[in-house]
Length: 396
Ligand SMILES: [Fe+2]
Image 1: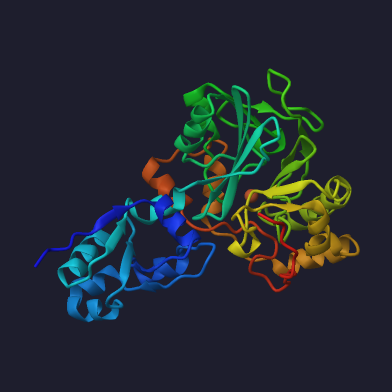
Image 2: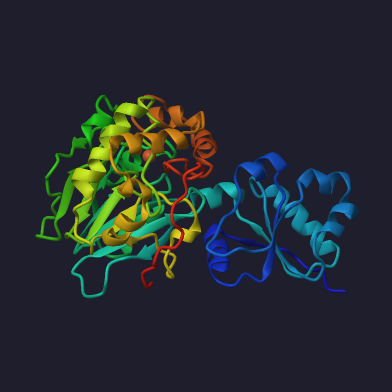
């Protein structure tokens, strides 16, 4: 009888499969606690089961019996080794189509999926890089032979490859704010590519790496008269939070405003003061942007927020109607909304903030551990105040 052998698959392949009509069962062999804390999420629901690796060690037959027979099986573990062990075991017991994830859940956590945002008739190219494992988005704007990156994650090879594919060089790496939930790739990108880091001094004063402050109203320009990239200081989530309006069409909003909620103003420990700043930002700086401006957020809460092309983007006209934060009568109501939805932040956020200003250095392995897990940046992600799920969705 021919012996089956399992195959390796990558995190990006897993995302592609899960974006279509997955025809397999995803078997997660991490322990129950890790599985409960962080699991694979995708645009569609799919069969996803958890049988810890140690169960296969202690009771192989009993554990194999729990895996649906006759199905294609894709296995996820922490690092790769235990998934391979279980994959070999399943193949030895009659399963014929078994794959295991290369580099485990960390590779899922770091995977970036590029989505082209700009239209073909626009003179520039704008990409959203969705990071399914973090529920976050970074961006790249390319004009002729120059590129700007916004809020890069540590997986900078993906941005470098995209710039190279377009025959452009990265001229700056721009931050919307000092992130608390993931480690920024900007300093490393600057080191490797010689580009500038641009960021708001309210968040980055004292940074141990070189950066050039952005100024409200400034245009981040390309050498060859590319699209305008207007800097709009939008404090509240942090005091240095800054949005970038590209060509008066696309607003990179960072964690100030998302598709279904506003950012959290309570992560910095001065929630009442920052909630007021955020309220004023929403009312005075963002509310009157033209309806057609497409908001491209730094995070999302769930895949329900994406459009048919699995892109996280919504126009200002729709957001004004659907985001609760825009529809509260005054600053007191806004403060109540924030207070009702406040929840503890993951302890690691304090450490990540330090890493992102250079006050704390960590190894790649430590960074992988700190960086793993979904963001907690939205004001009402898991709180009591819901948001309308009945939004009109734009066409893909
Ligand atoms: Fe944030």
